Length: 144
Image (cartoon, rainbow, N blue to C red; front, side):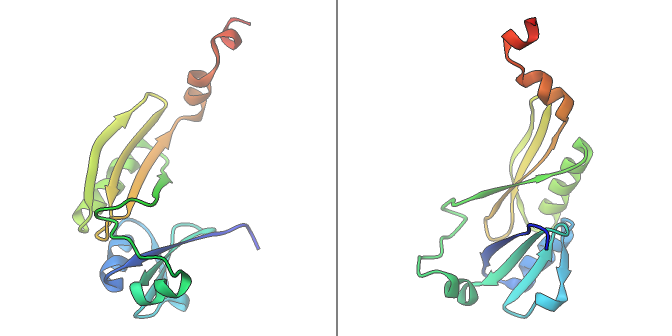
C-alpha cells in the first residue's frame, strides 16, 4: 500500500461538511461514509475523515476545540495554477466557507486561505518550483 494520510476533522454537521468538501473538489468514498462520518478523498493517498464529535471523541480524551476560536492546524493544498487557487477559494466561499485573507503573491508562490464551515483552515497554493529554486539560492551560490 502506498504511504497514505488520513486527516481526521471533528465537524458539527457531517452532511453539511461533506457537501462543502464535495463543492471544493473532494470525492466522497461511500464505502467509508455513514451518517456520523464521511470519508472525503483529495487524491489516491490523501483523505479527510469528517467525524461528528461523538465519533471523533473516541480517538482522544482531549477537549475538541472550536476551530472558529482556536487553531490547532492549518492545511495547505497544492494546485496546478494560480487560477486553480482562485477557483477553489471561490468554491469554498460559495459553499459556506469564509475567506481568511486575500491573495499572497511571492512571485514563485501564490496562495489564498479559507476556512470550512467548522472553522478548519485551508491554504490553497501554487508554486513555480523553478522560480522557487532561483529565489531560494544563496547569494554565494549565485556568484559561482
